[in-house]
Image 1: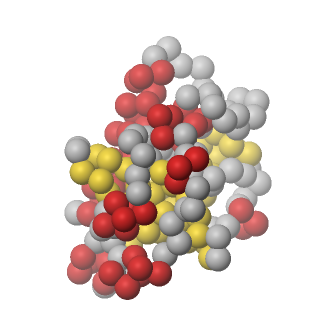
Image 2: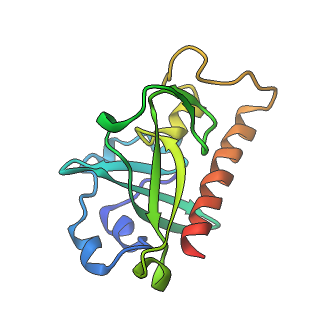
Length: 163
């Protein structure tokens, strides 16, 4: 993923109002992000940890989502699997719920997916972050195929939000 600016991130949101976009907290450490290892940028709002945001370039377009994600204190302490990167965690997977874009979202419709609670799927897939013993399934596919699967799973979620 190429490095993004705050303006690019704010312009990419598809499921919240302009006022919400102005008020949301974009990470201040954008220059320090490991952009070369990211399939998407994910973060939690430091003032409201149950709010999460994702930004990804999909099909040549930058897309950003606002969502709700339980804070780490509310996670269940059982082994769960992320639906995006297929990493298992002990208590490290959360249900990310995003309002749908447009009128459907205004009517309260939403879409959910189980995702790494720290929103670091890209780093788990690449082995840059360790989720513990047994976190990665033994697979015969290449790293590039794992990365493509992660992007495909994220893209399918974004498509559901924007449908």
